[in-house]
Length: 200
Picture (cartoon, rainbow, N blue to C red):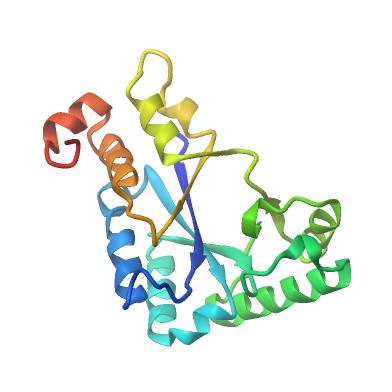
């Protein structure tokens, strides 16, 4: 069976909404524990910004080793890549790959662009550094996913897994928690029965 991918952008930046962003991310990540093997948490890293949190980097490395999390590239910083030149984009992505190699002992394979940027020169730059570019053309919002899960006669898990869900660790996350509960219990109706408080 295929696996649902949850695209989590902006890992890790300072946030006005959370004083301790590392603790908040770990809370968000903990929601995935009951569905390891069915759902993957794809943490899309801003390779410069995350260096403000060295202990958090160690957490990401450990979860990656355990197979609980998939780190990928979001950018060096949260830049407007569509306004950068081809050479500037290549240089930025090379810095990201260098950092990935030193940090995780392996390169990233996917570049999830900030704001879903999809200009032709970005695709070319990504290919040069061995990355597959993913914009926002094949994503599903948590709200849309919940609507689909409520109609199992129309959508199977296999069908739903063809799209990635775009979420952010700094969002409230109630809908994401419900989605993960559906994957844990096997259906929306069973999840609602088991987690009454969550589905109020």
